Amino acid sequence: MKLMTQLWGDRTLIANATGCSSIYGGNLPTTPYTVNCEGRGPAWANSLFEDNAEFGMGFRLAIDKLTEEARKLTAELGDSLGSELVEAVLAARAEDETAVAAQRERVADLQTKLNSDNSATARRLLELSDYLVEKSVWIVGGDGWAYDIGYGGLDHVLASDKNVNILVLDTEVYSNTGGQASKATPLAAVAKFATGGKHIGKKDLGMQAMSYGHVYVAQVAFGAKDAQTVNAMLEAVSYDGPSLIIAYSPCIEHGYDLGEGGSQQDLAVKSGYWPLYRFDPRRIIKGEAPLKLDSKEPTVTFSDFISKENRFRMLAKSNPEEAARLAELGQMHIQRKWTELKHKAQLTYEAGTLTD
Image (cartoon, rainbow, N blue to C red):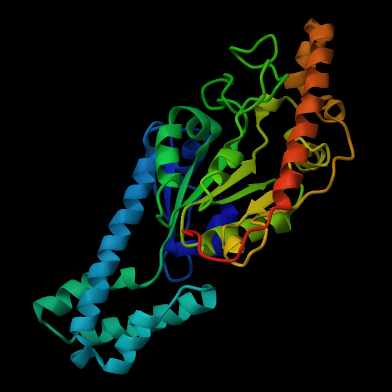
């Protein structure tokens, strides 16, 4: 969340599902969000568990409509604003932050000229002119929202062609309400409603999103490979369509000293339990494999990974035979998943458009 605001700052709009992230994100009267030296900062709002994806989609639809109106009015006032300025404003593309900064300057010049024009068209454009600067819309929540209660809405957004970014803070459990099992809870883990250990694997949200073909998908673990996380977020925002980032999120429910969060994330990646990847549909257009694996073949076992966390060790104490069986099954799941990902990362397509 901090990285997001550092990268896109005051042009960030965040739709935050109810959960841990909404508690630490909007715990009034204090809030972690702040403004820059110009007094601008991210816009944040919290919606319900069950409709946050639709809520965030509403951000995008409203912004697109207001931007469309602002561009239309800018073109209408071309003579009074100056054709050179108008052409530059309308042709601008938010390719990077340098381009965004240049557009801000152009919009500031446009606003200065509008202040001296009292026509109704100019007054309306002055109200809407900030929408001529590209906004970065983020839909944020935990796995309880994304995998379970809010999945219907999430899938609806992924199935669209709208330019929204979705960040799933995956703790693999309903953290905010006491640690109940969710569809993201992994095989062999103990949680409320899975006290005998989860007997089936977690839902593969990333693979489901990839199946659409037009969705940017990344799985990241900041503590294991921070550069990959940054690259994924930059690519997600640059992609003109729905983007999904699934972020490994340490939680007190995992049952270890969170000061060791970085090393535990690293172990999750090295075991193959949490593979790092980026699926970019733009590579399909170039005739390349859309999936890029950012982590290497597993070098440690699933048992090595789970031995560090109480959510897995609890079962080893209460039912060692079942714990051993599930650990072996978990290792098989990792090997199967890794084989599938490697195969998918080798698939190439004939160059063309995504709609071919």
